[in-house]
Length: 365
Image (cartoon, rainbow, N blue to C red; front, side):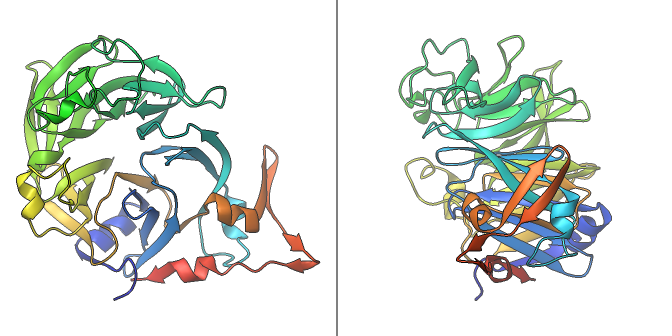
């Protein structure tokens, strides 16, 4: 069996091609970022190593990725893609690292580009924080029931929803708790959705909520413990189940009438041991749900190496995408400026270093 071998079914290939998108996934368990693309007939997969990758943020031409000790910002440029030395004229997007914000371990979960800058959900300190290089992190908001910024994961704040105007609107947490990991005791029944503007709890009693999103004016999120994609009704403070899935769901993105959702196979740890789905035969991957019918119309499943996903995002308008981690960027150097982007030859002892990682890590499915 090949490393990171995956299978696909349903309309997966056709939809990726028809919608003119690629998918980017983060798996902290495997320490990888995975990019999936299709030309309608074949699946292309690119696997890159990162240290504990979590939340992904996109705002063309930028991408940000939360990791173990910081957040890396990337920029894509058509010239870098077209002239990539190892494979010229193959890619239409190429994400190259331009900056790293060092946070040390604060357990950043969701991140987003917003009107307040690049904002991360700082789970360890139970707050939202700005990532700007001035400090390890700069707190901008915390739930009203949290009194102090202390690194004790008081309520397991994890998800953040940003609206179409780049305003932060909602967050999810596993509990309205203010003691060290206090959320653990009732994590299957104590989750909340909170309005950041009003500091009001919109929904409570949720089973491990993740990935709140505002899409076309509606609020969606995932109830991970009960395997449900839901749509929130703010007027009645209730929700409608859009789809019931199999697996611990986390990571949500939309294109047209379709939702792309990450599926995890859970390890039997103290965090997940009391979930019924732990004993299910589940393969990690991505499911595609038709929002109109609630039906699963496509599926990607991993046969090896990937057990847990954190985030799933759509790369709009790109059919073949590449990304370099920081170590790779030291070997394949580029200059990215306001007046153009170019690859730079890396000279050591007058010999150009040849990089083989690209051909080794990319496989056709």
